[in-house]
Image (cartoon, rainbow, N blue to C red; front, side, top):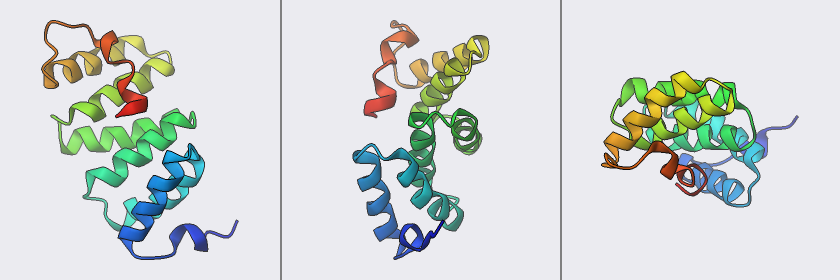
Length: 126
């Protein structure tokens, strides 16, 4: 496959292109753009989180999990990455492991009284 289109341009242009693909629900296209961007700027959370979301929405759950684990390892209080990691683990049938991350995500988001299940809509809308 020719990847020149996906890799073309400055990082800001590729970020915009990835967002365009993601917003159009072309998650595989967004992931193709974001792969190179994450390699180029591995320290930035935004591109890696969007890559994880693209993987999640295209049912590439192992890849989503790997990217999310990098984020929470670097930034343990990144509540949205924790929420996504919990949801990703749930979709893989790893409910006990997911529960830990979902509880942490709720606590970090200030949702002490609510359950982690109230955050269901946040993965697709966050």
